[in-house]
Length: 119
Length: 111
Image 1: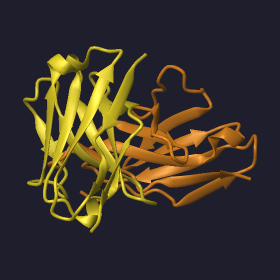
Image 2: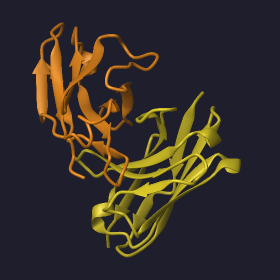
Image 3: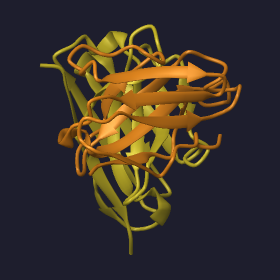
């Protein structure tokens, strides 16, 4: 079964750091580009970051640029999001999502992990 | 990059058809055939319903269809069913500095 499983969320103080992980299974992780998408409470989806299959291409939303770092370990079938200098507005459910092959869109999503930034 | 514009809510009776619009610009929706649609039930992860404007992934009901005209994409749900009640988001590839932009989201209510 194709599956993505996020972990690493939790409660952190403003200015703190957190590292999210996404474990992939049931497919050849190394050939797919991946994304992080977040959803603040009661709001819509916000794309956060993209990484190509070989990590050669990386993009960030302006709202997290300079604070978040996306990375992957294809040998471990894992995707990561290092989040530094966290703000209250980063509070959200964070989803990892697989990019569609040879197109644009996200065809497999994890169940999400919740990040709460509060003092 | 501004979010794509969707109506906040759309409703219909069981068996009816409804259409959700998604309006962008020539830099996203109008410039590429890379519009996708996602269904999200409360507390659940989004699910891909349509990609490349009008393609359905395997397993998605053919009651869901997509189209595009100029800078506006549309998702049509025909034969509306109670299980279709959910939030729906469009997304598009964009030529800006980031590859993706999402829509504002539409809550579909089955009356």
